Amino acid sequence: MEYLNSALRLYDDDFLPECRYEDWAAPERERLRHLYLSAAGRLAQLYIDQQSWDEVIQISNQTLARDPLWEPAYRHLMQAHARKGNLAQVQATFNRLRAGLQRDLGVDPSTETEQLLTSLVQPRRKP
Image 1 (cartoon, rainbow, N blue to C red):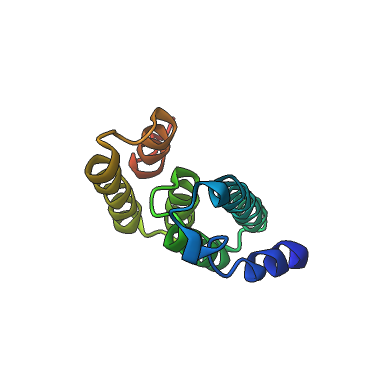
Image 2: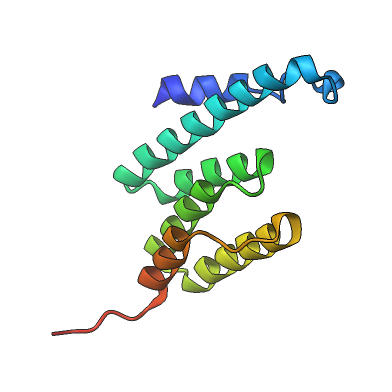
């Protein structure tokens, strides 16, 4: 985990932000961005496996600061809030994702994210 934390700390900003509109820089910028998101997702999953909910929330929020529409980070965040017993925050997190996707892309959250929301906020039935 320390390796992943160190790698994420190295990712300060997008590759050559001063060349944001230069076509030649775009492939490397996207490659590095993908590596960052992948590492952040792996780290969040490791924290989930350890039930370190505050760390899941922290890394997910950091990830969303870099990519405000990255659904896996929202799913991690929803899981952490649910495990901490904050179902209102689970719903608020989902609503924030849905609003962003609608506003920026004109789409709804994935079926996977909607199913996760349902599983987290529906009361469990006792047999």
